[in-house]
Image (tube, rainbow, N blue to C red; front, side):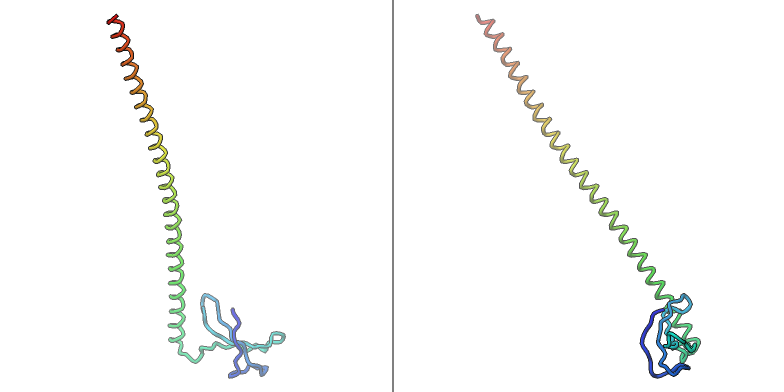
Length: 141
């Protein structure tokens, strides 16, 4: 229960102005009450601040408070779910980046292999030309 202000409009049995508190119990969440301000020797004074409301109004107020708390809980669940989706999205982005890096690495490797194959083809063509040239030269002698 949280401590609030001191009111002079009411007095407790010791003649002191009672302190206002807010209930944090599940049965009365957010409901204001007053109790004796004397911490050393309390006179036992205690009263709901909303006693002036009808029982139906108090029930409706408490129901609305409970619905508000439930809505806050739902929002927290949605935020948690949204956070989980963001975490998963970030993980997937990292995987895509890793795959793109791997694809680029493999593409570079393939280009280098193609260059080597082209050089080997050129070497083979030149070797064939030399052999044909030597054969021609040998035949013409």
